[in-house]
Amino acid sequence: MTMYYFLGSLFLLLLLLFKWWRGWTKMTRLPPGTMGWPLLGETLELIAAYKTTNPEPFTEKRQSRFGPVFKTHLLGKPTIYSTDSEVNKFVLQNEGRLFASSYPMSLEKILGKNSLLLTRGHLHKQLYSLTWSFVSSHVLKSHLMAEIEDIVCSTLSTWRNYIGQEQVIYVQDEAKKATFNVSVNQLLSTSVDAEWIEALRKEYLLLVEGFFSLPFNFPGTTYGRALQARSQITKRVTEVVNQRKALGNEGIGEYQDLLAAFLKQKLTDEQIVDMVISLLVAGYETTSMIITLAVKFLTDHSAVLEHLKAELNSIKNNKKSGDKLSWSDFKSMVFTQCVINETLRMGNMVGGVFRKALQDVDIQGFTIPKGWIVFASFRAVHLDEANFTDAHVFNPWRWLGCNASSNLNFKFTPFGGGPRFCPGHELARVQISVFLYYLLTQFSFALPLRTYMS
Ligand code: HEM
Figure (spheres, rainbow, N blue to C red):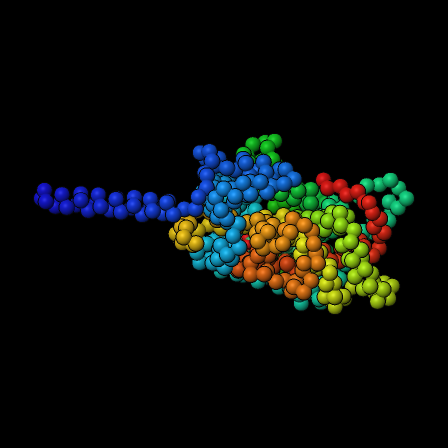
């Protein structure tokens, strides 16, 4: 009997030793880095960096000390932070197999668990292809581009009222109005009026502020206000869903928007609300920010502005007055795409993406332990001198001769990559191009122009 006890204890001891050894070797094969404070990790440093005009030092300081891949602790999770395009490529391409999209719990609460950004497997495929079918180049070509043009023109036409007045126009606000209207138009089309859209937009802005805050849900905190805004948005959208449902199948069939598609596919009310929020989040802030930054870069670089004006005016001069832009006009905006690419490279607000390791993953001599988060930083890759000569200089000409949608072997990934590649990439390009076209061909853009960004 004692013999069995002895052997049993020895076996247990060996097992424990083996487990400890595996854990230990895994830990010693982690990339270098610092984990910061208990629980908080290095989150405050990251948030502080993003609240300034230059978020780079957080990354650059660690990159120069530890190399392109380092460990840290962010938003409550141990994290591998990658500034290496090869690692980012591997992570993006192995979505669903070795890694899964992952966002901090606080963000998941704001987005909702059925958000396209968070769903996985079959539901993700279903919702992704549904979204794609509404924003593909085919749809843009057939009617969406014309609708975008109407929305942009009606936004810019209000500027005429200010002619001759000392009136400040905030490009960012105007771009936001236009892109928000485009998104709502696709989602809910004519079911809602301008007042409803503006009320939704105000609540939505409170919701977005919650993304960049500490997740303390108390009255008066940014995060608390974001969650409150989410429940207001839920109420509003659910009302529209109920009105639409009351029309019955035939009535629903008359609509060509995403809500009709969601209802036909029998999505639940909760899924619909989460999808509406996720599409607004994914498409609105991103596109309007790129428009604003493009205008900012143009005002700072007169040679680029002149070159772009020449391209857009030559398209305008080949059209009869009142003619709409055609798909081939859009395709002929070669330098415009260079300006958009360069703006995306230097100022993309999607700094990178979060993924969670589904198992231990060995890469470049390091181990990413199961359950750890990987942050694939696009911003760092885009601003790396090894990838782009004079990386901090705004030079749209560098893109001439490149395919507009090429990702240069994952060195240029403003729209991500792999199975979660942004379905709205072409829609975004069309919106930005149309906005720039009307801005530069209908308004005189005198320099020096003072630009204000709120
Ligand atoms: C300049 C504008 C835009 C930028 C920079 C951008 C960037 C991105 C990036 C980097 C991702 C990948 C996220 C990840 O891998 O986790 C993404 C995903 C996504 N984007 Fe965009 N996007 C833009 C515009 C749009 C627009 C206009 C739409 C409208 C339909 C849209 C819809 C989406 C959706 C639904 C996803 C989630 C895909 C998924 O998780 O499967 N985006 N976007």
